Length: 442
Image (cartoon, rainbow, N blue to C red):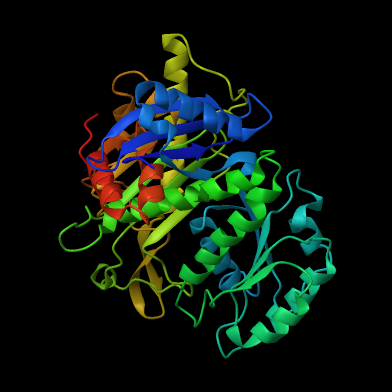
Protein backbone atom coordinates (compact mmCIF):
# COMPACT_ATOMS: atom_id res chain seq x y z
CA UNK A 1 0.00 0.00 0.00
CA UNK A 2 1.10 3.57 -0.67
CA UNK A 3 0.55 6.88 1.09
CA UNK A 4 -2.54 7.47 -1.05
CA UNK A 5 -6.04 6.01 -1.18
CA UNK A 6 -8.55 5.65 -4.02
CA UNK A 7 -12.13 6.58 -3.09
CA UNK A 8 -14.75 5.29 -5.53
CA UNK A 9 -18.48 5.95 -5.84
CA UNK A 10 -20.04 3.27 -8.06
CA UNK A 11 -23.16 5.02 -9.30
CA UNK A 12 -25.98 3.68 -11.43
CA UNK A 13 -24.86 5.78 -14.40
CA UNK A 14 -21.29 6.88 -13.71
CA UNK A 15 -18.48 5.62 -11.50
CA UNK A 16 -16.47 8.45 -9.94
CA UNK A 17 -13.05 8.15 -8.29
CA UNK A 18 -10.62 10.34 -6.35
CA UNK A 19 -6.99 9.73 -5.44
CA UNK A 20 -6.36 11.29 -2.02
CA UNK A 21 -2.95 11.89 -0.45
CA UNK A 22 -2.88 10.38 3.06
CA UNK A 23 -0.30 12.89 4.24
CA UNK A 24 -1.52 16.21 2.89
CA UNK A 25 -5.23 15.35 2.41
CA UNK A 26 -4.97 16.76 -1.12
CA UNK A 27 -6.99 15.39 -4.02
CA UNK A 28 -4.27 14.26 -6.40
CA UNK A 29 -6.48 13.24 -9.32
CA UNK A 30 -10.08 12.54 -10.31
CA UNK A 31 -11.61 10.14 -12.83
CA UNK A 32 -15.01 9.14 -14.16
CA UNK A 33 -16.22 6.22 -16.26
CA UNK A 34 -19.71 5.08 -17.37
CA UNK A 35 -20.78 2.34 -14.97
CA UNK A 36 -22.62 0.14 -17.44
CA UNK A 37 -20.68 0.84 -20.61
CA UNK A 38 -19.68 -2.80 -20.06
CA UNK A 39 -21.58 -5.56 -18.29
CA UNK A 40 -19.25 -5.60 -15.28
CA UNK A 41 -19.06 -2.63 -12.90
CA UNK A 42 -15.55 -3.68 -11.83
CA UNK A 43 -14.44 -2.70 -15.33
CA UNK A 44 -15.55 0.86 -14.54
CA UNK A 45 -13.73 0.76 -11.20
CA UNK A 46 -10.53 -0.52 -12.80
CA UNK A 47 -10.89 1.99 -15.63
CA UNK A 48 -11.08 4.85 -13.15
CA UNK A 49 -8.05 3.49 -11.32
CA UNK A 50 -6.07 3.35 -14.57
CA UNK A 51 -7.04 6.94 -15.36
CA UNK A 52 -5.92 8.04 -11.89
CA UNK A 53 -2.61 6.21 -12.36
CA UNK A 54 -1.89 8.26 -15.47
CA UNK A 55 -1.85 11.32 -13.22
CA UNK A 56 -0.13 9.61 -10.27
CA UNK A 57 1.29 6.04 -10.44
CA UNK A 58 0.52 5.51 -6.73
CA UNK A 59 -3.08 4.81 -7.71
CA UNK A 60 -2.11 1.36 -8.96
CA UNK A 61 -1.04 0.17 -5.51
CA UNK A 62 -3.27 2.34 -3.34
CA UNK A 63 -5.98 1.00 -1.04
CA UNK A 64 -9.44 1.22 -2.64
CA UNK A 65 -12.52 2.21 -0.62
CA UNK A 66 -15.85 2.23 -2.44
CA UNK A 67 -19.53 2.89 -1.97
CA UNK A 68 -22.28 1.88 -4.36
CA UNK A 69 -25.71 2.82 -5.59
CA UNK A 70 -25.42 0.70 -8.74
CA UNK A 71 -28.22 -1.62 -9.73
CA UNK A 72 -30.81 0.54 -8.03
CA UNK A 73 -28.91 0.89 -4.77
CA UNK A 74 -30.57 -0.53 -1.68
CA UNK A 75 -34.35 -1.01 -2.01
CA UNK A 76 -35.96 -1.34 1.42
CA UNK A 77 -39.48 -2.33 2.43
CA UNK A 78 -40.56 -1.25 5.92
CA UNK A 79 -43.02 -3.30 7.96
CA UNK A 80 -44.22 -1.66 11.19
CA UNK A 81 -47.16 -1.67 13.56
CA UNK A 82 -48.57 1.86 13.52
CA UNK A 83 -48.19 4.19 10.57
CA UNK A 84 -47.44 7.23 12.72
CA UNK A 85 -44.98 5.54 15.07
CA UNK A 86 -43.01 2.39 14.29
CA UNK A 87 -43.64 2.33 10.54
CA UNK A 88 -42.59 5.98 10.29
CA UNK A 89 -39.56 5.28 12.48
CA UNK A 90 -38.61 2.41 10.20
CA UNK A 91 -38.94 4.63 7.15
CA UNK A 92 -36.60 7.19 8.69
CA UNK A 93 -34.08 4.54 9.68
CA UNK A 94 -34.11 3.06 6.16
CA UNK A 95 -33.53 6.45 4.57
CA UNK A 96 -30.71 7.35 6.95
CA UNK A 97 -29.14 3.96 6.22
CA UNK A 98 -28.89 4.76 2.53
CA UNK A 99 -31.97 2.87 1.41
CA UNK A 100 -34.64 3.79 -1.09
CA UNK A 101 -37.95 3.02 0.61
CA UNK A 102 -40.11 1.24 -1.97
CA UNK A 103 -43.01 0.47 0.33
CA UNK A 104 -44.31 0.74 3.89
CA UNK A 105 -46.80 -1.65 5.51
CA UNK A 106 -48.45 -0.61 8.80
CA UNK A 107 -49.84 -3.86 10.21
CA UNK A 108 -51.97 -2.35 13.03
CA UNK A 109 -51.97 -5.72 14.73
CA UNK A 110 -52.48 -7.80 11.60
CA UNK A 111 -50.86 -8.01 8.19
CA UNK A 112 -53.27 -7.37 5.29
CA UNK A 113 -53.23 -10.35 2.97
CA UNK A 114 -52.23 -8.46 -0.13
CA UNK A 115 -50.10 -5.72 1.46
CA UNK A 116 -46.92 -7.74 1.87
CA UNK A 117 -47.23 -9.27 -1.58
CA UNK A 118 -47.46 -5.81 -3.09
CA UNK A 119 -44.63 -4.22 -1.13
CA UNK A 120 -42.26 -7.17 -1.53
CA UNK A 121 -42.00 -6.68 -5.25
CA UNK A 122 -44.84 -8.41 -7.00
CA UNK A 123 -46.13 -5.09 -8.35
CA UNK A 124 -42.81 -3.20 -8.47
CA UNK A 125 -40.39 -3.71 -11.35
CA UNK A 126 -37.21 -3.92 -9.27
CA UNK A 127 -38.45 -5.72 -6.18
CA UNK A 128 -37.04 -5.42 -2.66
CA UNK A 129 -33.50 -6.03 -1.43
CA UNK A 130 -34.12 -5.91 2.32
CA UNK A 131 -37.01 -5.76 4.78
CA UNK A 132 -36.80 -3.60 7.91
CA UNK A 133 -39.19 -5.02 10.51
CA UNK A 134 -40.26 -2.74 13.37
CA UNK A 135 -43.06 -2.78 15.91
CA UNK A 136 -43.76 -2.25 19.59
CA UNK A 137 -41.80 -0.38 22.21
CA UNK A 138 -39.51 -2.36 24.50
CA UNK A 139 -41.69 -4.11 27.06
CA UNK A 140 -44.85 -3.24 25.16
CA UNK A 141 -46.92 -5.05 22.54
CA UNK A 142 -44.94 -7.95 21.12
CA UNK A 143 -47.64 -9.86 19.26
CA UNK A 144 -47.81 -7.48 16.30
CA UNK A 145 -44.14 -7.73 15.36
CA UNK A 146 -44.20 -11.51 15.87
CA UNK A 147 -47.23 -11.81 13.58
CA UNK A 148 -45.49 -9.68 10.97
CA UNK A 149 -42.44 -11.94 11.18
CA UNK A 150 -44.66 -14.98 10.57
CA UNK A 151 -46.19 -13.30 7.52
CA UNK A 152 -42.71 -12.51 6.18
CA UNK A 153 -41.56 -16.10 6.68
CA UNK A 154 -44.63 -17.35 4.81
CA UNK A 155 -44.15 -14.92 1.91
CA UNK A 156 -42.07 -15.46 -1.20
CA UNK A 157 -39.42 -13.02 0.05
CA UNK A 158 -36.25 -14.87 1.04
CA UNK A 159 -33.86 -11.92 1.33
CA UNK A 160 -32.33 -10.36 4.44
CA UNK A 161 -34.47 -8.96 7.25
CA UNK A 162 -33.32 -6.44 9.85
CA UNK A 163 -35.47 -6.63 12.99
CA UNK A 164 -35.63 -3.35 14.94
CA UNK A 165 -38.74 -3.79 17.09
CA UNK A 166 -39.60 -4.83 20.63
CA UNK A 167 -36.49 -6.64 21.90
CA UNK A 168 -38.62 -8.95 24.07
CA UNK A 169 -39.85 -10.56 20.84
CA UNK A 170 -36.35 -11.38 19.60
CA UNK A 171 -36.36 -15.05 20.62
CA UNK A 172 -39.65 -15.78 18.88
CA UNK A 173 -38.67 -13.86 15.77
CA UNK A 174 -35.28 -15.59 15.57
CA UNK A 175 -37.07 -18.95 15.55
CA UNK A 176 -39.59 -17.81 12.93
CA UNK A 177 -36.92 -16.38 10.59
CA UNK A 178 -34.41 -19.18 11.11
CA UNK A 179 -34.67 -20.14 7.46
CA UNK A 180 -33.54 -16.81 6.01
CA UNK A 181 -30.83 -14.22 6.70
CA UNK A 182 -31.76 -11.82 9.47
CA UNK A 183 -30.22 -9.57 12.11
CA UNK A 184 -31.73 -8.70 15.49
CA UNK A 185 -30.95 -5.02 16.11
CA UNK A 186 -31.88 -2.76 19.00
CA UNK A 187 -35.38 -1.31 18.91
CA UNK A 188 -35.60 1.77 16.69
CA UNK A 189 -38.38 3.07 18.99
CA UNK A 190 -37.51 1.82 22.47
CA UNK A 191 -40.19 4.09 23.91
CA UNK A 192 -42.69 6.60 22.54
CA UNK A 193 -41.02 9.88 21.61
CA UNK A 194 -37.56 8.32 21.14
CA UNK A 195 -35.94 7.32 17.85
CA UNK A 196 -32.71 5.31 18.22
CA UNK A 197 -31.56 4.43 14.67
CA UNK A 198 -27.87 3.62 15.23
CA UNK A 199 -28.09 -0.16 15.76
CA UNK A 200 -30.57 -0.71 12.93
CA UNK A 201 -28.58 1.56 10.62
CA UNK A 202 -25.42 -0.50 11.24
CA UNK A 203 -27.34 -3.73 10.68
CA UNK A 204 -28.80 -2.50 7.39
CA UNK A 205 -25.33 -1.57 6.17
CA UNK A 206 -23.95 -4.99 7.15
CA UNK A 207 -26.75 -6.81 5.34
CA UNK A 208 -26.27 -4.60 2.29
CA UNK A 209 -22.62 -5.61 2.12
CA UNK A 210 -23.15 -9.29 2.84
CA UNK A 211 -26.22 -10.07 0.77
CA UNK A 212 -27.15 -7.23 -1.57
CA UNK A 213 -23.86 -6.23 -3.22
CA UNK A 214 -22.83 -9.84 -3.73
CA UNK A 215 -26.29 -10.83 -4.95
CA UNK A 216 -27.07 -8.13 -7.51
CA UNK A 217 -24.95 -9.64 -10.28
CA UNK A 218 -23.11 -6.37 -10.76
CA UNK A 219 -19.82 -8.09 -11.46
CA UNK A 220 -18.40 -11.50 -12.23
CA UNK A 221 -15.88 -10.56 -9.53
CA UNK A 222 -18.63 -10.17 -6.95
CA UNK A 223 -16.45 -11.11 -3.98
CA UNK A 224 -13.84 -8.52 -4.95
CA UNK A 225 -16.50 -5.85 -5.38
CA UNK A 226 -18.05 -6.72 -2.02
CA UNK A 227 -14.62 -6.42 -0.38
CA UNK A 228 -14.16 -2.89 -1.74
CA UNK A 229 -17.65 -1.55 -0.99
CA UNK A 230 -18.06 -0.06 2.49
CA UNK A 231 -21.79 0.69 2.25
CA UNK A 232 -24.60 2.25 0.18
CA UNK A 233 -23.56 5.59 -1.28
CA UNK A 234 -26.26 7.64 0.52
CA UNK A 235 -25.27 6.14 3.89
CA UNK A 236 -21.59 6.96 3.23
CA UNK A 237 -22.45 10.50 2.11
CA UNK A 238 -24.54 11.06 5.25
CA UNK A 239 -21.56 9.93 7.34
CA UNK A 240 -19.47 12.53 5.52
CA UNK A 241 -22.03 15.24 6.21
CA UNK A 242 -22.11 14.26 9.90
CA UNK A 243 -18.33 14.54 10.17
CA UNK A 244 -18.39 17.96 8.50
CA UNK A 245 -21.11 19.19 10.85
CA UNK A 246 -19.94 17.66 14.14
CA UNK A 247 -16.19 17.32 13.64
CA UNK A 248 -14.19 14.76 15.60
CA UNK A 249 -13.16 16.37 18.89
CA UNK A 250 -12.42 19.75 20.48
CA UNK A 251 -9.26 20.16 18.42
CA UNK A 252 -11.12 19.24 15.23
CA UNK A 253 -14.55 20.86 15.56
CA UNK A 254 -17.37 20.77 13.04
CA UNK A 255 -18.80 23.74 11.21
CA UNK A 256 -22.32 23.43 12.63
CA UNK A 257 -25.62 22.76 10.89
CA UNK A 258 -25.31 21.64 7.26
CA UNK A 259 -27.71 20.74 4.46
CA UNK A 260 -26.81 18.97 1.20
CA UNK A 261 -29.01 19.09 -1.89
CA UNK A 262 -28.16 16.40 -4.45
CA UNK A 263 -30.12 17.09 -7.63
CA UNK A 264 -29.87 13.83 -9.58
CA UNK A 265 -31.29 12.43 -12.77
CA UNK A 266 -33.79 10.11 -11.06
CA UNK A 267 -34.26 11.67 -7.61
CA UNK A 268 -33.40 14.74 -5.58
CA UNK A 269 -31.93 13.79 -2.21
CA UNK A 270 -31.61 16.12 0.77
CA UNK A 271 -29.27 15.41 3.68
CA UNK A 272 -29.17 17.51 6.82
CA UNK A 273 -27.31 17.45 10.10
CA UNK A 274 -28.68 19.93 12.64
CA UNK A 275 -28.31 20.60 16.34
CA UNK A 276 -31.32 19.41 18.33
CA UNK A 277 -31.71 22.33 20.69
CA UNK A 278 -34.55 22.27 23.21
CA UNK A 279 -34.50 26.05 23.34
CA UNK A 280 -35.77 26.18 19.77
CA UNK A 281 -39.09 24.75 21.00
CA UNK A 282 -39.60 26.97 24.02
CA UNK A 283 -42.37 28.76 22.11
CA UNK A 284 -44.72 25.80 22.39
CA UNK A 285 -43.56 23.28 19.82
CA UNK A 286 -45.88 20.31 19.63
CA UNK A 287 -43.83 17.17 20.36
CA UNK A 288 -43.73 14.36 17.80
CA UNK A 289 -44.48 10.75 18.70
CA UNK A 290 -41.33 9.84 16.73
CA UNK A 291 -38.59 12.18 17.87
CA UNK A 292 -36.40 13.95 15.31
CA UNK A 293 -32.77 12.95 14.91
CA UNK A 294 -29.73 15.09 14.25
CA UNK A 295 -28.97 13.45 10.89
CA UNK A 296 -31.77 13.12 8.33
CA UNK A 297 -32.06 12.10 4.68
CA UNK A 298 -35.08 12.37 2.43
CA UNK A 299 -35.48 11.12 -1.13
CA UNK A 300 -37.86 12.71 -3.62
CA UNK A 301 -38.43 10.20 -6.41
CA UNK A 302 -40.71 12.55 -8.36
CA UNK A 303 -38.07 15.27 -8.70
CA UNK A 304 -35.44 13.75 -10.97
CA UNK A 305 -33.74 16.03 -13.51
CA UNK A 306 -34.24 13.55 -16.32
CA UNK A 307 -36.84 10.93 -15.39
CA UNK A 308 -39.38 13.39 -14.00
CA UNK A 309 -38.90 15.68 -16.98
CA UNK A 310 -39.30 12.88 -19.51
CA UNK A 311 -35.72 13.19 -20.74
CA UNK A 312 -33.19 10.40 -21.37
CA UNK A 313 -30.47 10.03 -18.73
CA UNK A 314 -27.83 10.81 -21.37
CA UNK A 315 -29.32 14.22 -22.23
CA UNK A 316 -26.81 17.08 -21.99
CA UNK A 317 -27.80 20.71 -22.73
CA UNK A 318 -25.87 22.38 -25.55
CA UNK A 319 -27.52 25.77 -26.17
CA UNK A 320 -28.16 28.71 -23.87
CA UNK A 321 -31.90 28.03 -24.02
CA UNK A 322 -31.35 24.39 -23.04
CA UNK A 323 -29.10 25.43 -20.14
CA UNK A 324 -31.80 27.89 -19.02
CA UNK A 325 -34.41 25.11 -19.08
CA UNK A 326 -32.09 22.73 -17.21
CA UNK A 327 -31.54 25.31 -14.48
CA UNK A 328 -35.29 25.92 -14.21
CA UNK A 329 -35.86 22.20 -13.68
CA UNK A 330 -33.03 22.01 -11.13
CA UNK A 331 -34.28 25.07 -9.23
CA UNK A 332 -37.81 23.65 -9.01
CA UNK A 333 -36.49 20.26 -7.89
CA UNK A 334 -34.20 21.78 -5.24
CA UNK A 335 -36.82 24.20 -3.89
CA UNK A 336 -39.51 21.52 -3.67
CA UNK A 337 -37.23 18.88 -2.14
CA UNK A 338 -35.80 21.20 0.51
CA UNK A 339 -39.24 22.50 1.49
CA UNK A 340 -40.51 18.94 1.92
CA UNK A 341 -37.44 18.17 4.03
CA UNK A 342 -37.59 21.33 6.14
CA UNK A 343 -41.31 21.51 6.76
CA UNK A 344 -43.08 24.56 8.19
CA UNK A 345 -43.36 26.49 11.39
CA UNK A 346 -46.77 28.03 12.05
CA UNK A 347 -48.98 29.11 14.92
CA UNK A 348 -52.06 26.98 15.57
CA UNK A 349 -54.75 27.00 18.23
CA UNK A 350 -54.84 23.92 20.47
CA UNK A 351 -56.67 23.04 23.70
CA UNK A 352 -53.62 24.49 25.47
CA UNK A 353 -53.85 27.77 23.60
CA UNK A 354 -51.71 29.12 20.79
CA UNK A 355 -48.71 26.90 20.03
CA UNK A 356 -46.07 26.73 17.31
CA UNK A 357 -46.52 23.60 15.23
CA UNK A 358 -43.52 22.43 13.22
CA UNK A 359 -43.01 19.64 10.73
CA UNK A 360 -39.86 18.41 9.05
CA UNK A 361 -36.32 19.47 9.93
CA UNK A 362 -35.69 23.02 11.13
CA UNK A 363 -32.95 24.30 8.80
CA UNK A 364 -32.97 27.94 9.90
CA UNK A 365 -29.60 27.74 11.67
CA UNK A 366 -27.81 25.92 8.84
CA UNK A 367 -24.37 27.40 8.22
CA UNK A 368 -23.67 25.82 4.84
CA UNK A 369 -25.75 24.66 1.88
CA UNK A 370 -23.84 22.20 -0.31
CA UNK A 371 -25.07 21.55 -3.82
CA UNK A 372 -24.37 18.31 -5.65
CA UNK A 373 -25.34 16.77 -8.97
CA UNK A 374 -24.25 17.12 -12.57
CA UNK A 375 -26.39 20.19 -13.24
CA UNK A 376 -24.34 22.07 -10.61
CA UNK A 377 -20.94 20.50 -11.29
CA UNK A 378 -21.04 21.01 -15.05
CA UNK A 379 -23.23 24.09 -15.35
CA UNK A 380 -22.46 27.62 -16.45
CA UNK A 381 -20.71 30.11 -14.14
CA UNK A 382 -23.06 31.22 -11.36
CA UNK A 383 -25.31 28.16 -11.64
CA UNK A 384 -25.18 27.45 -7.89
CA UNK A 385 -26.61 30.82 -6.94
CA UNK A 386 -29.30 30.66 -9.62
CA UNK A 387 -30.42 27.14 -8.63
CA UNK A 388 -29.95 27.24 -4.86
CA UNK A 389 -30.03 30.95 -4.00
CA UNK A 390 -33.74 31.02 -3.19
CA UNK A 391 -33.21 28.41 -0.46
CA UNK A 392 -31.52 30.97 1.79
CA UNK A 393 -34.06 33.49 3.04
CA UNK A 394 -35.10 35.33 6.20
CA UNK A 395 -38.55 36.21 4.93
CA UNK A 396 -40.62 33.22 3.85
CA UNK A 397 -44.29 34.17 4.07
CA UNK A 398 -45.43 30.53 4.11
CA UNK A 399 -43.36 29.61 7.16
CA UNK A 400 -40.92 27.18 5.53
CA UNK A 401 -38.00 26.52 7.90
CA UNK A 402 -35.31 27.41 5.36
CA UNK A 403 -31.69 28.44 6.01
CA UNK A 404 -31.48 32.10 6.99
CA UNK A 405 -27.76 32.91 6.78
CA UNK A 406 -26.14 29.97 4.99
CA UNK A 407 -23.30 30.11 2.50
CA UNK A 408 -23.69 28.10 -0.75
CA UNK A 409 -20.94 25.87 -2.17
CA UNK A 410 -20.84 23.05 -4.74
CA UNK A 411 -19.22 19.67 -4.11
CA UNK A 412 -17.51 19.63 -7.48
CA UNK A 413 -15.22 16.67 -6.76
CA UNK A 414 -17.60 14.26 -4.94
CA UNK A 415 -15.73 15.00 -1.73
CA UNK A 416 -18.56 14.07 0.63
CA UNK A 417 -18.54 10.45 -0.50
CA UNK A 418 -14.76 10.37 -0.02
CA UNK A 419 -15.09 11.95 3.43
CA UNK A 420 -17.57 9.28 4.45
CA UNK A 421 -15.39 6.49 3.08
CA UNK A 422 -12.32 7.78 4.93
CA UNK A 423 -14.08 8.62 8.19
CA UNK A 424 -13.44 5.25 9.88
CA UNK A 425 -9.96 4.27 8.70
CA UNK A 426 -8.44 7.72 8.17
CA UNK A 427 -10.50 10.14 10.28
CA UNK A 428 -8.00 13.00 10.30
CA UNK A 429 -7.68 12.95 6.51
CA UNK A 430 -11.46 12.79 6.22
CA UNK A 431 -11.76 15.79 8.52
CA UNK A 432 -9.24 17.85 6.57
CA UNK A 433 -10.92 16.94 3.30
CA UNK A 434 -14.31 17.97 4.73
CA UNK A 435 -12.95 21.30 5.91
CA UNK A 436 -11.55 21.96 2.44
CA UNK A 437 -15.08 21.61 1.07
CA UNK A 438 -16.36 24.14 3.59
CA UNK A 439 -13.92 26.74 2.20
CA UNK A 440 -14.80 26.26 -1.46
CA UNK A 441 -15.83 29.45 -3.25
CA UNK A 442 -18.48 29.46 -5.97
